[in-house]
Length: 107
Image 1 (spheres, one colour):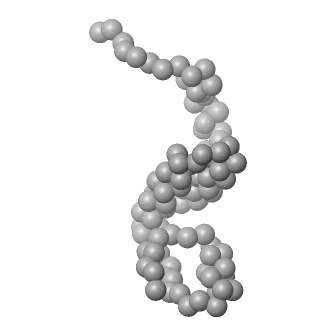
Image 2 (cartoon, rainbow, N blue to C red; image 1 turned 30 degrees about the vertical axis):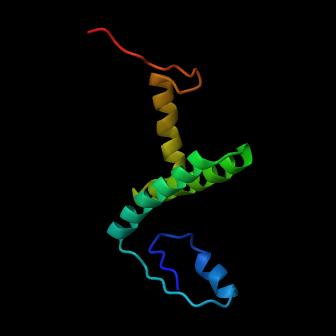
């Protein structure tokens, strides 16, 4: 039996159950959940970085976005509030659309 020891999406146990396989899960404490969510965010970002097509990239970005929704909820907020904060920061400091790469700054 393979051991995964990782956070999975809520419906994964049902998917496994439908295959007739046995499995074990447990519910994480809030502290464990945040730790595992952070680990999952790296996993999903690595999968995005490895994507070779636009379709794969978008699929992985959807997973990253799902993680962001979960992070917002863990911190007592919503993705909508995060989006408002993002907009304010973009107004003050800009976004990344211009592809500006800072080489150095003279002292």
